[in-house]
Image (cartoon, rainbow, N blue to C red; front, side):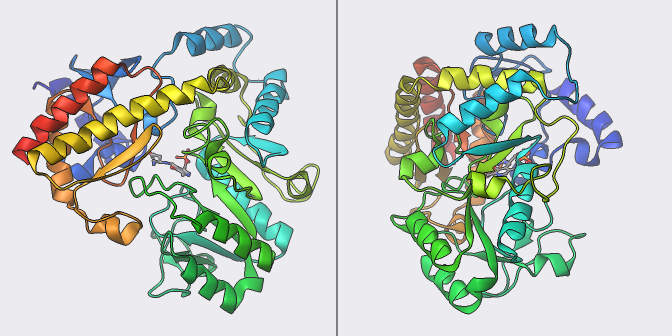
Length: 427
Ligand code: KE4
């Protein structure tokens, strides 16, 4: 398969941009591949600059739940952009977006728009620390909440030991206030709160993990976090940057019936444009500047064109029948892949919920980061490459999700399942 144009662009890019990409995972290093440069997307398809077409299951890492260049979104953007691109002043579109989020996400009474999921979680952490007057943060191994210093922290040596910087450049004085625990391990949370509960400002969690591959919360895990945080006066923050509007129009919190104190959003609410948001109870959010004293700002926050793309997307997602079809498509794909693996005698664990899922090459259950790391990453690498040769574009990492969009056709899903069968044969 000729990929000369991608190769040429990658060569130029590497001279000018670190690693040739503007976000590390795009470099496809973890699957020993070079990135494809993409020319265009339409529906569930993308084309690379060498003219090859792929069925896309990255969907821009989640935002494109309506697929590429959805006519409803394009029309809305074209209309909005006639009025200009940005004013640095409030617009009606920001009010409409805030009304939609407050209406659709059960626990959110007030919301602030930002420009990325990183900004959303970083701001939520600052707000939680200010509101509680405490400093410690609890997160979970394998969960990713963007790259702010307090959240780019690796687990300490043992349970309840302070975090260590997850990257050079993060001061130990910052990392030490974050403790990272095994996902789904409520006992470790009880141990930490028993020791330092009155120092904990917040627990932040992906209510369905999507950044170690998809890992579902065990029965009672999220309820347990809600009970422990209430008992000790800490805030519960749901990072729904992936799950918000993905697994239900009310996110994972609606699906599981748990009300966090703060919710972080992103991806889908931008309809493909750079948008994030954080929100929660008025009592907490009113502490954010300029109403309150917790500072947070952004030149392009609430950008009207980005708002229009998000509003157009959410208008479609307000129709709950959309989620029935997303569930149906997800079942077809993920159950089809499981069936093929069984037929070909390949051990896989497929974690799935609605239109998101992951294929792990293991015969064990995958319930946390430790069990993810025991799956066969080398087999995933070969699976990724075989699927690409069949024209299937998966995330170039075993630690990411497969996303099905509302416009993935049954034909494309069936083709993908057959391609998986061929790939399993050669693994
Ligand atoms: P951004 O700053 O990338 O918009 O959002 C950070 C973030 C926060 N919370 C969750 C649950 C997230 O998944 C993310 C970002 N997700 C990754 C992929 N899983 C983005 C891809 C990338 O880094 O290029």
